[in-house]
Length: 269
Image (tube, rainbow, N blue to C red; front, side):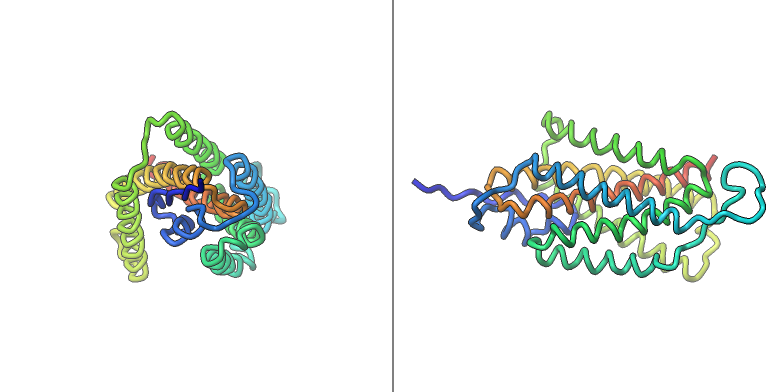
């Protein structure tokens, strides 16, 4: 007797890589394939994409930092940090490649690697700028990202946190509200409103960024649930690359928010 796999629960957590369409068409097991995705396959491919991301990040870091002629001492006194020439090209390239991957998950193997390289270059340059202002902040953000990822994974595996539709809706709505808030602050920055540089706004920024870190951690939990549902439903093998890409997107967001949070805390001391 042939049984039909149930569609995975709607658990995107605000990550566009795990949209309703993707989960319905690719993670439901409806597409016939000789092999199906596995947790081990997703793990290996996620590590591969992160290796590309880190390697490209080192390139972006090196492109953003240049030694100066006069040795003024140790640390960053003898280096200057600038936006590298290919920064904006890589930024827009990552945006468009990310859209292409979301439109056609079958191409995630190739486009996911390209996205990791472009995004890594951008993150490397940004990280160099943050680290030039506060030495050691990037290492702390990386360690924090790893710790939050492992904590979210353990909480999910032990079923201490159980993803539900209500939780997914709440996280998605909160992320949408956070995006609107960031857009509003961006508009205010255009008019150079002095309150944006006050201590009170910095305190608000710390609270908002801490909330963003929590949302990113919850999004990881929801991503784990979507991947597990796809494995149980017998989703096609190529979805391993796509799920790895989706996890990488959430990890990048988590790293950026932790970097911003640590920068705000260091300025608040």
